[in-house]
Length: 87
Image 1 (cartoon, rainbow, N blue to C red):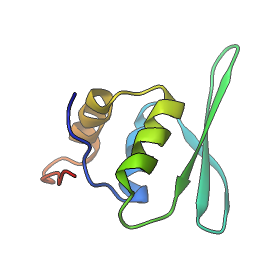
Image 2: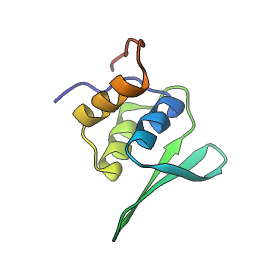
Image 3: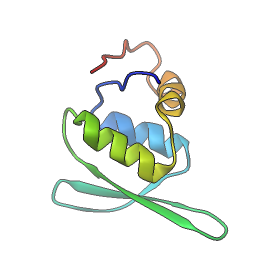
Image 4: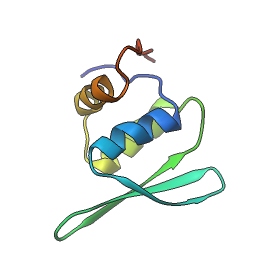
């Protein structure tokens, strides 16, 4: 299993938007994203923090149905030229 990168909420939202997630609302520091499919809607909440805790990031990925490897592939597209930091 690959190590989790250190990400901000903005970086994670950019990566999730590549996967079809859209920001639907925000209340305080909680940003709600949804991905609508033919039969299901996947909803996840991202706290608007500069550095997401590893457990929080892992929970968001689990709700989004993504693995750490999937996230790293998305980040390679979104964050071109940025050297990732890892926990």
